[in-house]
Image (cartoon, rainbow, N blue to C red; front, top):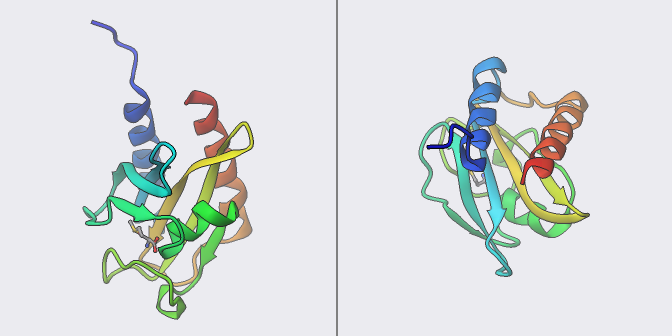
Length: 137
Ligand code: SME
């Protein structure tokens, strides 16, 4: 049997590392576009289980990033109208797209139980993580 890790195992390892080493990263997961459909499917993640395993484009923070192709930093989720709540403990969220050949094919999504924790350093770091993810897909 091959000892090579699958892509999903590698993605889960990334989630585990981020959640473990950054105290304000409390839920870390990936969503990916479902083929040519305008919806995201939940991929590997760590943190509380979520009911939101399918997210239509445009809906919630994740669905908006699927359309905008831009990072979305939310300092206070309570101030967002178009937001999908997964857990009442969540105070803030950051979503950064994954581009393969310039195409937005998915995203990393991080929820924080700390209010307004995300800085431009998180954006630059997560852009790097997403570029590494893109190169292993
Ligand atoms: N809050 C997200 C939904 C996914 S959960 O955070 C895991 C959103 O508004 O799109």
